[in-house]
Length: 133
Image (tube, rainbow, N blue to C red; front, side, top):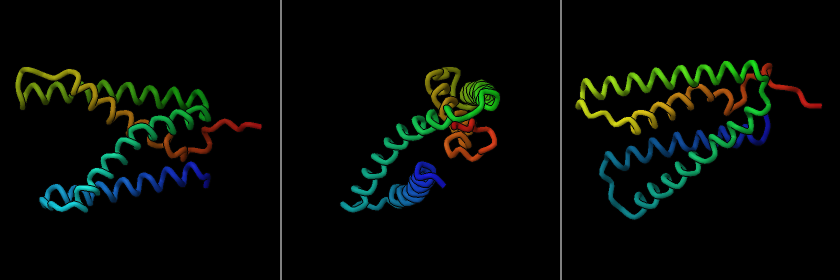
């Protein structure tokens, strides 16, 4: 296991555990200095994750075969269009006729990127990587 893959798995595990703890702090209405510092630390970790995940995904995508990368990109585009249309439709039906397009697009991009590129982020499919000599 490479150091980058190990670091990515550790960061995801820490983020998952901190998300649960932050939800308990926020919904439990816990108000002390330690909880406030933890939530601020969680916000910093979330900002780091927003930068780290796309960068590591791009670095890992360079190692993939073009055929596999094209399939992942097609999956991303199809899921983006599906999530965008579903989000706009549900906003129109359940909220109001005023649909926030930017909000729907940002949710669709995040969700489809996360689902389409999760195996590229962890580079689990070794058979689709190009071997460098």
